[in-house]
View 1 (cartoon, rainbow, N blue to C red):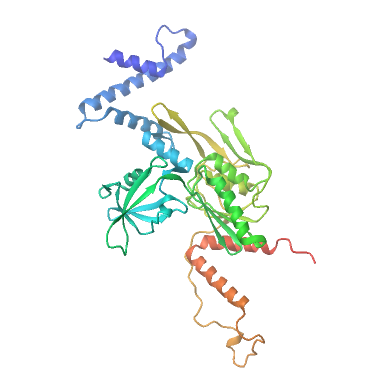
View 2 (view 1 turned 90 degrees about the horizontal axis):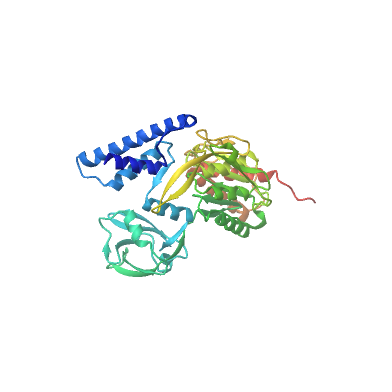
Length: 433
């Protein structure tokens, strides 16, 4: 039995055995040590399999051993079994066959947070707060949220029946939906008066196209009065390298974006910007924090080094390594760290992170103003303003002030970013007369 196992290990490592020539003495010694350790692994495997207190599954043991080998290298290398690999592909593709609802688990049922616009869920009239109790007649109670999500996903153009409990309805009712291609929205945009606000939550295959649409929509909504863009990368854990490069390139006309250096530095790769700035020179502020990692740091580092954007917030996470997905037989894969990346100035941010140009910790703002505002108008006998009443412009200014004060309370970092854009715009080109 032992000889057979050793033969298998030899085949797995590509070793051959026989008389070694003097010139191969060092190589043979190294191979012998590797062979001895693999033999030890086989012995440990046999001991665990035959003597552990409970029966163990061979596949589970071997996968755990592989994962242990990879995770011992660094925190980002790992083994992806079939389920993990498929989920990773869905995440990076940014699309899947499903219904288009954001959900959570509450009281043992799946609760609808929100249907996504223009998806089967939205067209079928599902509403925030709906509870899904059954999927195709199978009760949800007792299952995990991941189990329920997997049941709702499936092949495009296949039907699924959801049993819904809705506030105000006397009894549960069934809704039949047809699965469609659902695109995960990694880019969300919002107009902040005369500034475009773009939130990027992750870098998947939909990110750059989503950014292009967002910038176009902002220009259409705000028009020529647009003062700039805020790109929010806070709590963005990263994603696809090529998307980080494309997002950086969107704001750069030339120059290096990032370089990746593997163990063999002769294989260093450099990625450069192409002509064209989607923002057409508008001021840009990028928000980061300690949840901004990897691809987010590539974007922030490139725009910072080229002085194309003001980086604001707090120091980023500091993940300066590149992971490559290596598919293996059996629809499994390895996520292996294969290189480090460097910003255009040649800096590695591994463990260090991106330090913002302007450090703005997230803070809670409280007003210290008194209830009575002191002004000229409060003085006895003060002259009155010639214009009676409050003008529309004044009302608009008061409304904007109230909104700004509320934003400073809700999101102090974003409030500062908007102030920065408006400050820069004050010193921009002025019309000639």
